[in-house]
Amino acid sequence: MIINKKAIIKILCAVMTVVGLSMLLPLVVSLFYGEYDVAKCFGICAAPTIALGLLGVKILPKQDNSVLRMRDGFFIVAATWFVMSLIGCLPFIISGAIPRLADAFFETVSGFTTTGSSILSEIESLPRGILYWRSFTHWLGGMGVLVLTIALLPMLGIGGQKIMRAETTGPTMDKISFTINSGAKGLYIVYGAMTLIEMILLGLCGLDFFDASTHAFGTLGTGGFSTYNTSIGHFQNLPAEIIITVFMILAGVNFNLYYSAVSGKSLGAFKDPEFKGYMAIVGVSMVFITVMLTVSHTYSGFGESLRMSSFTVGSIISSTGYAITDYEVWPEACKLPVLILMLIGGCGGSTAGGLKVIRVIVLVKLIRRNVKKRLSPRTVTAVKVGGKAVSEDTLNGIVAHIGLYALLCILGTFIISLTGVDNITSFTSVVTCLSNIGPGFGLIGPTENFGFYSDFIKYLLSVYMIAGRLEMFTIAILFTRDFWDKNK
Image (cartoon, rainbow, N blue to C red; front, side, top):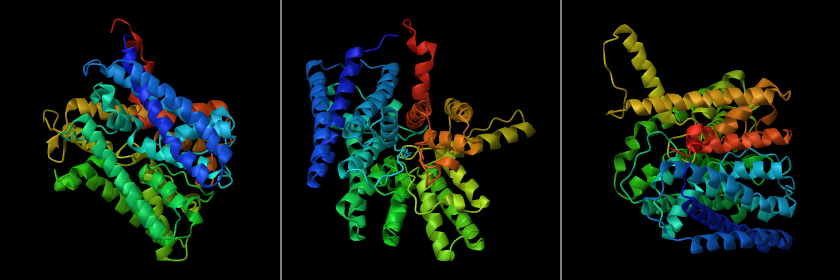
Protein backbone atom coordinates (compact mmCIF):
# COMPACT_ATOMS: atom_id res chain seq x y z
CA MET A 1 0.00 0.00 0.00
CA ILE A 2 1.27 3.46 -0.94
CA ILE A 3 0.05 6.22 1.35
CA ASN A 4 0.91 9.89 1.60
CA LYS A 5 2.86 9.70 4.85
CA LYS A 6 3.65 13.41 5.09
CA ALA A 7 0.04 14.45 4.59
CA ILE A 8 -1.17 11.86 7.09
CA ILE A 9 1.40 12.82 9.73
CA LYS A 10 0.54 16.49 9.23
CA ILE A 11 -3.16 15.89 9.82
CA LEU A 12 -2.44 13.71 12.86
CA CYS A 13 -0.25 16.51 14.22
CA ALA A 14 -3.09 18.96 13.66
CA VAL A 15 -5.45 16.67 15.57
CA MET A 16 -2.89 16.40 18.38
CA THR A 17 -2.84 20.20 18.56
CA VAL A 18 -6.62 20.37 18.81
CA VAL A 19 -6.74 17.71 21.55
CA GLY A 20 -3.88 19.39 23.45
CA LEU A 21 -5.54 22.80 23.28
CA SER A 22 -8.80 21.21 24.45
CA MET A 23 -7.06 20.09 27.64
CA LEU A 24 -6.52 23.73 28.59
CA LEU A 25 -10.23 24.08 29.40
CA PRO A 26 -10.26 21.40 32.16
CA LEU A 27 -6.90 22.84 33.30
CA VAL A 28 -8.62 26.18 33.93
CA VAL A 29 -11.53 24.42 35.64
CA SER A 30 -9.06 22.60 37.91
CA LEU A 31 -7.40 25.88 38.86
CA PHE A 32 -10.78 27.48 39.54
CA TYR A 33 -11.66 24.71 42.01
CA GLY A 34 -8.22 24.75 43.61
CA GLU A 35 -7.21 21.35 42.22
CA TYR A 36 -3.64 22.36 41.52
CA ASP A 37 -2.25 18.83 41.26
CA VAL A 38 -4.88 17.98 38.66
CA ALA A 39 -4.16 21.22 36.79
CA LYS A 40 -0.49 20.22 36.75
CA CYS A 41 -1.42 16.86 35.22
CA PHE A 42 -3.33 18.57 32.41
CA GLY A 43 -0.38 20.90 31.86
CA ILE A 44 2.00 17.92 31.65
CA CYS A 45 -0.26 16.33 29.03
CA ALA A 46 -1.20 19.45 27.08
CA ALA A 47 2.19 21.16 26.72
CA PRO A 48 4.10 18.42 24.85
CA THR A 49 1.01 17.46 22.84
CA ILE A 50 0.54 21.03 21.60
CA ALA A 51 4.27 21.52 21.03
CA LEU A 52 4.70 18.32 19.01
CA GLY A 53 1.49 18.96 17.10
CA LEU A 54 2.42 22.52 16.12
CA LEU A 55 5.94 21.44 15.24
CA GLY A 56 4.65 18.78 12.87
CA VAL A 57 2.15 21.17 11.27
CA LYS A 58 4.83 23.85 10.84
CA ILE A 59 7.78 21.84 9.50
CA LEU A 60 5.82 19.64 7.09
CA PRO A 61 5.12 21.41 3.78
CA LYS A 62 1.64 22.24 2.55
CA GLN A 63 0.22 19.62 0.24
CA ASP A 64 -1.71 19.93 -2.97
CA ASN A 65 -5.45 19.37 -2.55
CA SER A 66 -5.32 16.29 -4.73
CA VAL A 67 -2.71 14.39 -2.72
CA LEU A 68 -5.15 12.37 -0.64
CA ARG A 69 -6.85 9.27 -1.93
CA MET A 70 -9.80 7.50 -0.34
CA ARG A 71 -7.53 4.93 1.32
CA ASP A 72 -5.55 7.81 2.85
CA GLY A 73 -8.79 9.22 4.20
CA PHE A 74 -9.80 5.92 5.78
CA PHE A 75 -6.36 5.46 7.32
CA ILE A 76 -6.30 9.02 8.68
CA VAL A 77 -9.72 8.73 10.29
CA ALA A 78 -9.01 5.36 11.92
CA ALA A 79 -5.55 6.43 13.11
CA THR A 80 -6.93 9.70 14.46
CA TRP A 81 -9.46 8.04 16.74
CA PHE A 82 -6.89 5.69 18.22
CA VAL A 83 -4.21 8.39 18.60
CA MET A 84 -6.48 10.95 20.23
CA SER A 85 -7.87 8.28 22.57
CA LEU A 86 -4.35 7.39 23.70
CA ILE A 87 -3.54 11.07 24.28
CA GLY A 88 -6.90 11.74 25.90
CA CYS A 89 -6.51 8.98 28.48
CA LEU A 90 -3.23 10.41 29.83
CA PRO A 91 -4.86 12.88 32.28
CA PHE A 92 -6.84 10.01 33.82
CA ILE A 93 -3.69 7.92 34.30
CA ILE A 94 -1.29 10.67 35.44
CA SER A 95 -3.80 12.14 37.91
CA GLY A 96 -4.49 8.69 39.36
CA ALA A 97 -8.22 9.05 38.74
CA ILE A 98 -8.15 5.97 36.49
CA PRO A 99 -4.62 4.58 36.92
CA ARG A 100 -4.85 1.48 34.70
CA LEU A 101 -4.33 1.88 30.93
CA ALA A 102 -7.10 -0.52 29.88
CA ASP A 103 -9.62 1.31 32.08
CA ALA A 104 -8.46 4.80 31.09
CA PHE A 105 -8.40 3.91 27.38
CA PHE A 106 -11.91 2.40 27.57
CA GLU A 107 -13.24 5.49 29.36
CA THR A 108 -11.61 7.86 26.89
CA VAL A 109 -12.74 5.95 23.81
CA SER A 110 -16.24 5.86 25.31
CA GLY A 111 -16.04 9.62 25.73
CA PHE A 112 -14.73 10.54 22.28
CA THR A 113 -17.07 8.10 20.50
CA THR A 114 -19.95 9.52 22.59
CA THR A 115 -20.84 6.04 23.81
CA GLY A 116 -21.04 6.83 27.52
CA SER A 117 -20.23 3.32 28.76
CA SER A 118 -18.09 3.54 31.87
CA ILE A 119 -15.85 1.38 34.04
CA LEU A 120 -16.41 3.70 37.03
CA SER A 121 -18.66 2.75 39.92
CA GLU A 122 -17.89 5.90 41.90
CA ILE A 123 -17.96 9.15 39.93
CA GLU A 124 -18.67 11.97 42.36
CA SER A 125 -15.39 11.52 44.22
CA LEU A 126 -13.32 12.35 41.13
CA PRO A 127 -11.73 15.83 40.82
CA ARG A 128 -13.81 18.46 39.05
CA GLY A 129 -11.17 18.96 36.37
CA ILE A 130 -11.17 15.25 35.52
CA LEU A 131 -14.97 15.17 35.38
CA TYR A 132 -14.96 18.20 33.11
CA TRP A 133 -12.48 16.59 30.71
CA ARG A 134 -14.48 13.37 30.80
CA SER A 135 -17.62 15.21 29.70
CA PHE A 136 -15.82 17.50 27.25
CA THR A 137 -14.57 14.48 25.29
CA HIS A 138 -18.23 13.92 24.37
CA TRP A 139 -18.54 17.38 22.91
CA LEU A 140 -15.30 17.04 20.95
CA GLY A 141 -16.19 13.63 19.60
CA GLY A 142 -19.83 14.42 18.90
CA MET A 143 -19.36 16.48 15.77
CA GLY A 144 -16.02 14.85 15.08
CA VAL A 145 -12.51 15.98 15.95
CA LEU A 146 -11.51 15.83 12.30
CA VAL A 147 -14.41 18.08 11.33
CA LEU A 148 -13.16 20.53 13.96
CA THR A 149 -9.62 20.19 12.63
CA ILE A 150 -10.74 20.92 9.08
CA ALA A 151 -12.75 23.91 10.32
CA LEU A 152 -9.98 25.44 12.45
CA LEU A 153 -6.87 24.56 10.45
CA PRO A 154 -7.49 25.33 6.76
CA MET A 155 -3.78 26.12 6.42
CA LEU A 156 -3.16 22.40 6.20
CA GLY A 157 -3.57 22.78 2.48
CA ILE A 158 -4.94 19.24 2.19
CA GLY A 159 -8.25 18.41 0.57
CA GLY A 160 -10.77 17.43 3.23
CA GLN A 161 -13.58 15.82 1.23
CA LYS A 162 -12.11 12.31 1.44
CA ILE A 163 -11.59 12.70 5.19
CA MET A 164 -15.14 13.94 5.65
CA ARG A 165 -16.52 10.95 3.73
CA ALA A 166 -14.73 8.54 6.03
CA GLU A 167 -15.64 10.55 9.15
CA THR A 168 -19.31 11.43 8.69
CA THR A 169 -22.17 9.05 9.44
CA GLY A 170 -25.18 7.89 7.47
CA PRO A 171 -25.54 6.30 4.03
CA THR A 172 -27.17 9.20 2.22
CA MET A 173 -25.99 12.34 3.93
CA ASP A 174 -27.24 15.35 2.00
CA LYS A 175 -24.30 17.21 0.55
CA ILE A 176 -25.15 20.84 1.07
CA SER A 177 -23.27 22.94 -1.47
CA PHE A 178 -20.53 24.51 0.59
CA THR A 179 -16.78 24.26 0.72
CA ILE A 180 -15.38 21.83 3.27
CA ASN A 181 -13.93 24.55 5.50
CA SER A 182 -17.01 26.79 5.52
CA GLY A 183 -19.32 23.80 5.91
CA ALA A 184 -17.38 22.42 8.86
CA LYS A 185 -17.37 25.84 10.49
CA GLY A 186 -21.09 26.20 9.88
CA LEU A 187 -21.87 22.85 11.47
CA TYR A 188 -19.76 23.70 14.51
CA ILE A 189 -21.44 27.10 14.84
CA VAL A 190 -24.84 25.36 14.96
CA TYR A 191 -23.45 22.71 17.32
CA GLY A 192 -21.90 25.30 19.61
CA ALA A 193 -24.98 27.52 19.58
CA MET A 194 -27.27 24.65 20.57
CA THR A 195 -24.85 23.70 23.35
CA LEU A 196 -24.81 27.27 24.67
CA ILE A 197 -28.60 27.53 24.55
CA GLU A 198 -28.98 24.33 26.54
CA MET A 199 -26.40 25.50 29.08
CA ILE A 200 -28.33 28.74 29.61
CA LEU A 201 -31.66 26.93 29.95
CA LEU A 202 -30.21 24.44 32.44
CA GLY A 203 -28.74 27.36 34.36
CA LEU A 204 -32.21 28.92 34.55
CA CYS A 205 -33.43 25.60 36.00
CA GLY A 206 -31.02 25.95 38.92
CA LEU A 207 -27.96 24.03 37.73
CA ASP A 208 -24.62 25.75 38.33
CA PHE A 209 -22.18 26.41 35.47
CA PHE A 210 -20.23 23.21 36.06
CA ASP A 211 -23.29 20.94 35.97
CA ALA A 212 -25.01 22.87 33.17
CA SER A 213 -21.97 22.78 30.89
CA THR A 214 -20.94 19.16 31.52
CA HIS A 215 -24.45 17.87 30.94
CA ALA A 216 -24.91 20.05 27.87
CA PHE A 217 -21.70 18.53 26.48
CA GLY A 218 -23.12 15.06 27.08
CA THR A 219 -26.51 15.94 25.60
CA LEU A 220 -25.46 17.58 22.32
CA GLY A 221 -22.65 15.07 21.89
CA THR A 222 -25.17 12.31 22.77
CA GLY A 223 -22.57 10.88 25.12
CA GLY A 224 -24.20 10.53 28.51
CA PHE A 225 -21.30 10.90 30.96
CA SER A 226 -22.80 12.52 34.03
CA THR A 227 -20.89 13.97 36.97
CA TYR A 228 -23.12 12.07 39.40
CA ASN A 229 -23.50 8.39 40.25
CA THR A 230 -27.25 8.49 39.63
CA SER A 231 -26.92 10.46 36.37
CA ILE A 232 -29.68 13.04 35.71
CA GLY A 233 -31.79 11.43 38.44
CA HIS A 234 -29.48 13.14 40.95
CA PHE A 235 -31.10 16.53 40.35
CA GLN A 236 -34.75 15.53 40.77
CA ASN A 237 -35.44 18.57 38.62
CA LEU A 238 -38.37 18.18 36.22
CA PRO A 239 -37.71 21.35 34.13
CA ALA A 240 -34.08 20.28 33.63
CA GLU A 241 -35.22 16.78 32.64
CA ILE A 242 -37.61 18.24 30.05
CA ILE A 243 -34.87 20.45 28.57
CA ILE A 244 -32.39 17.57 28.41
CA THR A 245 -35.05 15.32 26.84
CA VAL A 246 -35.79 17.87 24.12
CA PHE A 247 -32.12 18.48 23.34
CA MET A 248 -31.32 14.75 23.31
CA ILE A 249 -34.02 14.25 20.68
CA LEU A 250 -32.79 17.29 18.72
CA ALA A 251 -29.23 15.95 18.80
CA GLY A 252 -30.46 12.80 17.08
CA VAL A 253 -31.49 14.84 14.01
CA ASN A 254 -29.22 15.36 10.99
CA PHE A 255 -27.27 18.55 11.77
CA ASN A 256 -27.19 19.38 8.08
CA LEU A 257 -30.92 20.12 8.38
CA TYR A 258 -30.21 22.70 11.09
CA TYR A 259 -27.42 24.23 9.03
CA SER A 260 -29.67 24.38 6.00
CA ALA A 261 -32.48 25.98 8.00
CA VAL A 262 -30.44 28.65 9.79
CA SER A 263 -28.54 29.56 6.62
CA GLY A 264 -31.86 30.18 4.89
CA LYS A 265 -31.20 27.61 2.17
CA SER A 266 -34.10 25.31 2.88
CA LEU A 267 -36.71 25.72 5.57
CA GLY A 268 -38.45 22.71 4.05
CA ALA A 269 -35.55 20.47 5.03
CA PHE A 270 -37.55 19.15 7.97
CA LYS A 271 -39.91 17.48 5.50
CA ASP A 272 -37.02 15.06 5.07
CA PRO A 273 -38.38 11.47 5.26
CA GLU A 274 -35.70 10.39 7.72
CA PHE A 275 -36.58 13.26 10.06
CA LYS A 276 -40.27 12.41 9.89
CA GLY A 277 -39.53 8.73 10.42
CA TYR A 278 -37.31 9.55 13.40
CA MET A 279 -39.95 11.70 15.06
CA ALA A 280 -42.61 9.05 14.38
CA ILE A 281 -40.49 6.38 16.08
CA VAL A 282 -39.93 8.69 19.06
CA GLY A 283 -43.64 9.50 19.36
CA VAL A 284 -44.91 5.93 19.00
CA SER A 285 -42.31 4.61 21.46
CA MET A 286 -43.17 7.23 24.06
CA VAL A 287 -46.90 6.55 23.80
CA PHE A 288 -46.55 2.75 23.91
CA ILE A 289 -44.15 2.67 26.86
CA THR A 290 -46.15 5.31 28.77
CA VAL A 291 -49.35 3.27 28.38
CA MET A 292 -47.61 0.06 29.45
CA LEU A 293 -46.03 1.69 32.49
CA THR A 294 -49.36 3.22 33.46
CA VAL A 295 -51.44 0.04 33.20
CA SER A 296 -48.76 -1.97 35.01
CA HIS A 297 -48.66 0.59 37.85
CA THR A 298 -44.87 0.69 37.64
CA TYR A 299 -45.02 4.34 38.72
CA SER A 300 -47.52 6.38 40.70
CA GLY A 301 -49.58 7.58 37.76
CA PHE A 302 -49.78 8.65 34.12
CA GLY A 303 -47.70 11.79 34.62
CA GLU A 304 -44.81 9.94 36.23
CA SER A 305 -44.98 7.22 33.58
CA LEU A 306 -44.86 9.83 30.81
CA ARG A 307 -41.89 11.50 32.47
CA MET A 308 -39.86 8.28 32.72
CA SER A 309 -40.88 7.07 29.28
CA SER A 310 -40.13 10.32 27.45
CA PHE A 311 -36.71 10.78 29.00
CA THR A 312 -35.66 7.17 28.45
CA VAL A 313 -36.86 7.06 24.84
CA GLY A 314 -35.02 10.32 24.07
CA SER A 315 -31.91 9.05 25.82
CA ILE A 316 -31.81 5.66 24.08
CA ILE A 317 -32.78 6.56 20.50
CA SER A 318 -30.31 9.45 20.50
CA SER A 319 -27.72 7.06 22.01
CA THR A 320 -27.09 9.52 24.85
CA GLY A 321 -27.48 7.12 27.73
CA TYR A 322 -28.50 9.53 30.49
CA ALA A 323 -30.87 8.01 33.06
CA ILE A 324 -33.46 9.10 35.58
CA THR A 325 -34.77 5.60 36.25
CA ASP A 326 -33.73 1.96 35.89
CA TYR A 327 -35.59 0.63 32.86
CA GLU A 328 -34.67 -2.94 33.86
CA VAL A 329 -37.47 -2.81 36.46
CA TRP A 330 -39.97 -2.08 33.69
CA PRO A 331 -42.40 -4.74 32.40
CA GLU A 332 -40.94 -7.08 29.77
CA ALA A 333 -43.17 -5.48 27.12
CA CYS A 334 -41.28 -2.19 27.62
CA LYS A 335 -37.79 -3.65 27.48
CA LEU A 336 -38.02 -4.86 23.87
CA PRO A 337 -38.82 -1.37 22.50
CA VAL A 338 -35.79 -0.05 24.41
CA LEU A 339 -33.57 -2.70 22.76
CA ILE A 340 -35.06 -1.87 19.33
CA LEU A 341 -34.33 1.84 19.88
CA MET A 342 -30.73 0.91 20.73
CA LEU A 343 -30.42 -0.83 17.39
CA ILE A 344 -32.10 1.90 15.32
CA GLY A 345 -30.43 4.99 16.78
CA GLY A 346 -30.76 8.50 15.37
CA CYS A 347 -30.52 10.09 11.93
CA GLY A 348 -27.56 10.03 9.58
CA GLY A 349 -25.44 13.16 10.03
CA SER A 350 -26.41 13.48 13.70
CA THR A 351 -24.23 12.92 16.75
CA ALA A 352 -26.31 9.82 17.58
CA GLY A 353 -25.25 6.23 17.04
CA GLY A 354 -27.10 3.10 15.97
CA LEU A 355 -27.91 1.74 12.53
CA LYS A 356 -29.53 5.09 11.65
CA VAL A 357 -33.20 5.66 10.82
CA ILE A 358 -32.57 6.13 7.10
CA ARG A 359 -31.15 2.61 6.81
CA VAL A 360 -34.18 1.15 8.56
CA ILE A 361 -36.53 3.05 6.23
CA VAL A 362 -34.68 1.86 3.13
CA LEU A 363 -34.50 -1.71 4.44
CA VAL A 364 -38.28 -1.80 5.01
CA LYS A 365 -38.89 -0.44 1.49
CA LEU A 366 -36.42 -2.95 0.05
CA ILE A 367 -38.21 -5.84 1.76
CA ARG A 368 -41.53 -4.54 0.44
CA ARG A 369 -40.12 -4.38 -3.10
CA ASN A 370 -38.81 -7.93 -2.89
CA VAL A 371 -42.17 -9.19 -1.65
CA LYS A 372 -43.86 -7.56 -4.65
CA LYS A 373 -41.29 -9.09 -6.99
CA ARG A 374 -42.26 -12.53 -5.73
CA LEU A 375 -45.72 -11.90 -7.19
CA SER A 376 -44.49 -10.16 -10.37
CA PRO A 377 -40.90 -11.24 -11.08
CA ARG A 378 -40.66 -9.18 -14.26
CA THR A 379 -41.72 -5.94 -12.60
CA VAL A 380 -38.92 -3.41 -12.15
CA THR A 381 -39.62 -1.12 -9.19
CA ALA A 382 -37.24 1.45 -7.75
CA VAL A 383 -36.91 1.94 -4.00
CA LYS A 384 -37.77 5.58 -3.36
CA VAL A 385 -37.18 7.75 -0.32
CA GLY A 386 -38.65 11.23 -0.35
CA GLY A 387 -39.67 10.79 -3.96
CA LYS A 388 -36.11 10.04 -5.07
CA ALA A 389 -34.95 6.65 -6.27
CA VAL A 390 -32.22 5.04 -4.20
CA SER A 391 -29.40 3.66 -6.32
CA GLU A 392 -28.66 -0.05 -6.31
CA ASP A 393 -25.15 0.70 -5.02
CA THR A 394 -26.66 2.48 -2.02
CA LEU A 395 -29.10 -0.38 -1.43
CA ASN A 396 -26.25 -2.88 -1.53
CA GLY A 397 -24.24 -0.70 0.85
CA ILE A 398 -27.10 -0.54 3.34
CA VAL A 399 -27.68 -4.29 3.25
CA ALA A 400 -23.93 -4.88 3.65
CA HIS A 401 -23.79 -2.43 6.57
CA ILE A 402 -26.64 -4.14 8.41
CA GLY A 403 -25.12 -7.54 7.63
CA LEU A 404 -21.71 -6.50 8.99
CA TYR A 405 -23.41 -5.05 12.08
CA ALA A 406 -25.16 -8.39 12.69
CA LEU A 407 -21.96 -10.40 12.15
CA LEU A 408 -19.99 -8.20 14.55
CA CYS A 409 -22.75 -8.54 17.15
CA ILE A 410 -22.69 -12.33 16.85
CA LEU A 411 -18.89 -12.50 16.97
CA GLY A 412 -18.59 -10.10 19.90
CA THR A 413 -21.34 -11.82 21.86
CA PHE A 414 -19.68 -15.19 21.34
CA ILE A 415 -16.26 -13.93 22.48
CA ILE A 416 -17.64 -12.25 25.60
CA SER A 417 -19.81 -15.25 26.49
CA LEU A 418 -16.64 -17.38 26.58
CA THR A 419 -15.65 -15.43 29.71
CA GLY A 420 -18.69 -16.77 31.55
CA VAL A 421 -20.88 -13.68 31.22
CA ASP A 422 -24.57 -14.33 30.55
CA ASN A 423 -25.89 -13.94 27.00
CA ILE A 424 -28.08 -10.89 27.68
CA THR A 425 -25.16 -8.98 29.17
CA SER A 426 -22.81 -10.18 26.41
CA PHE A 427 -25.18 -9.25 23.58
CA THR A 428 -26.18 -5.84 24.90
CA SER A 429 -22.54 -5.03 25.74
CA VAL A 430 -21.74 -5.44 22.08
CA VAL A 431 -24.86 -3.62 20.88
CA THR A 432 -24.42 -0.69 23.23
CA CYS A 433 -20.77 -0.25 22.22
CA LEU A 434 -21.29 -0.78 18.49
CA SER A 435 -24.30 1.57 18.54
CA ASN A 436 -22.53 4.02 20.90
CA ILE A 437 -25.43 3.91 23.38
CA GLY A 438 -23.88 3.51 26.86
CA PRO A 439 -26.05 1.33 29.11
CA GLY A 440 -27.42 -2.08 28.19
CA PHE A 441 -29.15 -4.88 30.07
CA GLY A 442 -28.05 -7.33 32.72
CA LEU A 443 -24.70 -6.61 34.35
CA ILE A 444 -24.25 -3.42 32.29
CA GLY A 445 -27.69 -1.91 32.91
CA PRO A 446 -28.28 1.82 33.57
CA THR A 447 -27.24 1.45 37.21
CA GLU A 448 -24.21 -0.77 36.49
CA ASN A 449 -20.86 -0.37 34.68
CA PHE A 450 -18.27 -2.23 32.58
CA GLY A 451 -15.59 -2.36 35.26
CA PHE A 452 -15.89 -6.11 35.87
CA TYR A 453 -14.68 -7.02 32.38
CA SER A 454 -11.11 -8.20 31.76
CA ASP A 455 -8.59 -5.92 30.05
CA PHE A 456 -8.93 -7.92 26.82
CA ILE A 457 -12.71 -7.42 26.69
CA LYS A 458 -12.31 -3.72 27.49
CA TYR A 459 -9.92 -3.30 24.57
CA LEU A 460 -12.22 -5.34 22.35
CA LEU A 461 -15.23 -3.20 23.25
CA SER A 462 -13.11 -0.07 22.76
CA VAL A 463 -12.46 -1.17 19.17
CA TYR A 464 -16.19 -1.85 18.79
CA MET A 465 -16.98 1.67 19.98
CA ILE A 466 -14.60 3.22 17.45
CA ALA A 467 -15.89 0.92 14.71
CA GLY A 468 -19.47 1.91 15.51
CA ARG A 469 -18.59 5.60 15.54
CA LEU A 470 -16.96 5.24 12.11
CA GLU A 471 -19.79 3.19 10.59
CA MET A 472 -17.71 -0.01 10.82
CA PHE A 473 -16.44 -0.18 7.24
CA THR A 474 -13.74 2.44 7.93
CA ILE A 475 -12.23 -0.01 10.43
CA ALA A 476 -13.13 -3.16 8.50
CA ILE A 477 -11.25 -1.88 5.44
CA LEU A 478 -8.02 -1.88 7.44
CA PHE A 479 -8.30 -5.65 7.90
CA THR A 480 -8.50 -6.40 4.19
CA ARG A 481 -5.56 -7.62 2.12
CA ASP A 482 -6.35 -5.17 -0.69
CA PHE A 483 -5.91 -2.17 1.60
CA TRP A 484 -2.33 -3.14 2.40
CA ASP A 485 -1.45 -4.32 -1.11
CA LYS A 486 1.46 -2.20 -2.34
CA ASN A 487 0.40 -2.67 -5.93
CA LYS A 488 -3.02 -1.07 -5.42
